[in-house]
Image (tube, rainbow, N blue to C red; front, top):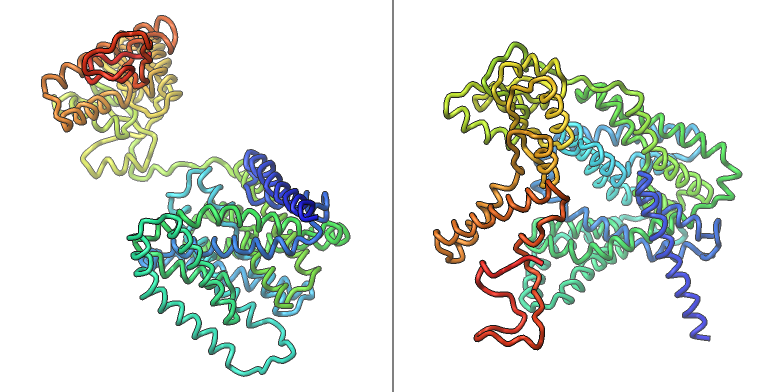
Length: 605
């Protein structure tokens, strides 16, 4: 019987892991994110799907530790110094968006017939956008480091912070239970617990971790990290507050500790698995039959909540001086609910603020809004006209007549220009990155705006009068287009081209350019030579070795141009040990099969 029970439990564990392993990569490949993949997998194996789990609440109870650890890691990232530097964006822009959108969405809940506490929780839960979804979109669009991206990150930080007081408010809004005295004792206990946790974190945690680190027992450090997270969560829960608040405070208290990175590395595996399990459990808890009966209500809730939140986001963005295009982009990214909504809704259901139907409808609204976000961003990219580059203070290439025309003025071009300018050669420089052009002017360079792949731009940049055209762009496809254009229109000019890698260099040689060089070749050669010198190799031998490497590289490149990328491999110095036959005589002082110490004896496979 025990074996049968164990087998049944093992089937459930395998089902949970298998559902996540199958669904998450598929949804990430489709651009819908891992969170939605977990939800869908949970629905598939839950009571509304295959029915492998009749009681998803039990799984959800265990999986809540994933949220606890998630908040601990968020706390570790919330160093007081970092928060202070972003205080304007976080507590200005972020707070304004959360408060305005929260008020508007609470109004929507009241119009829908919810009580004030339920409407507040439903609205504030939807305000908390998905950090995972927004950050993924920003990274894919390459906007994380832009001003618009930094503002988005600041808003996400404020929303991550907001979950902690919101969970405390949910506890205060909970209906009074029989036996409640209605006095201030619970509040006093809660405040005392927070103060006690701060004191312990400030004066006890760091000394404890120093002692454990001195013991050099990795497993004990991991156990201590779990003890801190779960102990802080337990202390807050016993005082009537949330486990999540305790974990978050513990993280903040350790955020500037020298053990922060070690703690994060120890907790991360548990956090990832348990948080995924939490999202699976949320999906299993989704009551599809109830949603099917109330599909009009769910559809109306999705449209109403997303539209109202979008209007609040747009108003705040414009009030804080954002461009209309950036405001619309922020609307597309932030108009959905997020993973913290499920944490808040679960707490509200446990506290009696939400009934089962309200919880199901609110959760379904958030899930559908998260699913719609990638589609909304794709539609935005299609419908919005391409952004016009502002050329304020930047001159367009026209009537240039330098002896050398340089196309691209990034890191490579900046260094390459120095030799020509030192000799007094006139160099015309064109670049498509407006910010780089403006920055170059601060260092005494005159760089013009121009796309080197366009025939009329090359004419305006003086390519027909240039003796040499230096192609210094960092994109292989762009470089090839410039080479083809220049060879067709300006055959008199000698082409010097920055090659992306060895394969690109081979193509350029076949294209008969005057000169090509792989962008990292010379720096890597100098790097290796410096390493040899530091190891005591004489300068004469270093030069000899470098010359041999260059000779081999040139010879191998000639063979590859005539054949393919694998030609001339025997010219490489490899580090794979060369097996020696057992019958071979041992050389004096050598170990059979070992790599020789003399660099000249090392051969490739």
